[in-house]
Length: 134
Image (cartoon, rainbow, N blue to C red; front, side):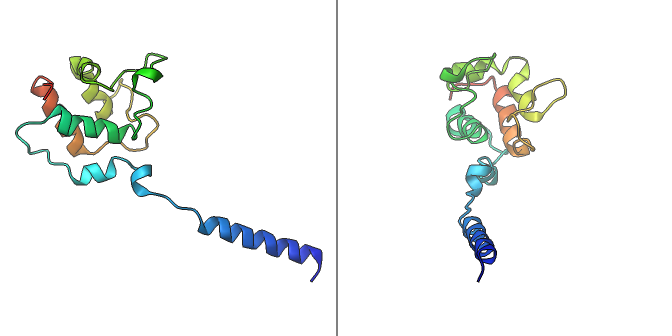
C-alpha cells in the first residue's frame, strides 16, 4: 500500500470516528422544548416562581447569560430577579419581545423560533394579573 492510499485511509477513518462521536443533547440545543411539553395555559393562577422563572431560564439557557447582573452591558435587561422581570412588564414589553411583535426585539435573541405559544400565553396571563411576586 503506498503512502497516498494509507494517508487517505487514515483520513477516512478519522473522519468517521469524529463523526460517530458527535452527540447532541436535544434539551441543551432547545432548552424550552421540554418545558413546552409540560405547559398548561389553562391555569387560573400563574406563579412567578413556578411558571415564569422556569420559562425565562429555559428560554435564555441554563445560565441566563444575557440577562443576569454580571452581564449587564449594552443596555441589557436584568431578568435574574423578580424586580428586573417585573420592570419589563410595564407596557407589556416582556410579552411583546417573546411574542415577536413588530418594532420590538425578538427574544430569545438569535433564535429561529419564538418560545411556545403556551408559554407566551402564561406570560401574558401573569402580566394581566398584575405580575405578582408569587
